[in-house]
Length: 200
Image 1 (cartoon, rainbow, N blue to C red):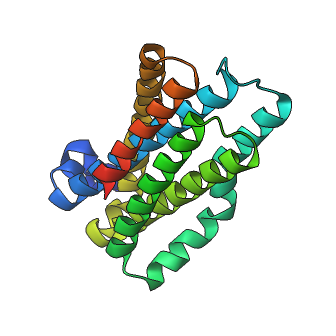
Image 2: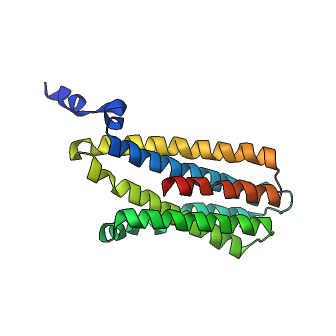
């Protein structure tokens, strides 16, 4: 009898998505992570597969650092900071800031900026994105009962990861249409701002 209790406690996808607050939070996460996927794929294409730029091992290492560093540096502190501030206002401000930074990186690509300036801009976008995702995750306990929190986290993370992949696929498709040079790369990168607008 006891072995059936955990199964009975599970809400399942339908049960979780029947709650409007959870649906809204997941939609915000989907929008944010779609933009992340777009930006990451666009940046990778601009650095590694742009015929107007010569990719070298240092550029590859810098690109990987830009994508991974925020998860190591910002992740552990984001939750604690968000607990002290008005989470809703912070998320709106962070998404607006991310949108501005995305457009800034797109402008750098359009004008042929390379090296440290481009990587710092991309690192700023990735850092703010990590902050946004931490804020959305921190909001789950406010809308989901404690006994369903693990399940809700798994569902939200799964949907978010799938949406990131979709965003990356969209970037690859747009890149094939708009071109692989600096102009095409900048336009594809600029499209990632849609994710910030939707998540705000």
